[in-house]
Length: 310
View (tube, rainbow, N blue to C red):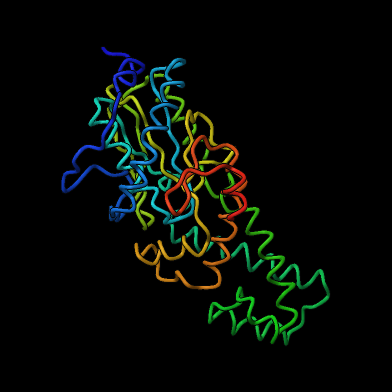
């Protein structure tokens, strides 16, 4: 069997292969990806430096993990799928794994938990500040039904709402992307088993309903590179990554991507905006761990530049 280092060494004067109508994508059930010329251009920019990074990592092991991370909807699935296709076209086995299969709750319940964390902490913040009253609760009841309690524009009308939102946001930041929300332990064990050459791997699948949970046995014997595409792929709780790629974006750019992909029905809500801003801050803090960083415009940039754009 040809060693990975030898396969990578054979990659000279690389040119992008012709794309078929469909290429394999990540393993998230029901995920909809739409590969555009923008995604292709970005993957073409990333592939040569990625292969150089893989060559260095291949000196230590035969199975490598690449993390493609960034804001929700920024193009991780599309670009990871393209990079995987390019690797396979060069004779290097690859598999795209979606980290979105590894939260502790299905999307419906996790969305509800996020909101519960925010609102419970917001109420405690009001109590601690001595700003809570039955009149305040009556207004909150209306705001909750309208789902506008996270809207900062309402603070001018209800000054106490600033205290509520600050306390809720702090608690939400302590939940999002942490081990309370994401099962890093299970994912780390999978990456470790892959790097050790174990096969098959039982990989988790998660739909959007409680009964839509199952595992699939995936033969990884011929897989050289596992590409993990995930918002939290730069989090320090994630171990076993050999090369990290950050797809940089602003919360506004991320929101537009989500709108085009129809990731949820509340893309423009104040709460979604808050979640994206918190996630973006986490991603910016992870920029220093990325080997490659690509801007929204498709240029390779430094970690300092990425942190400045958050």
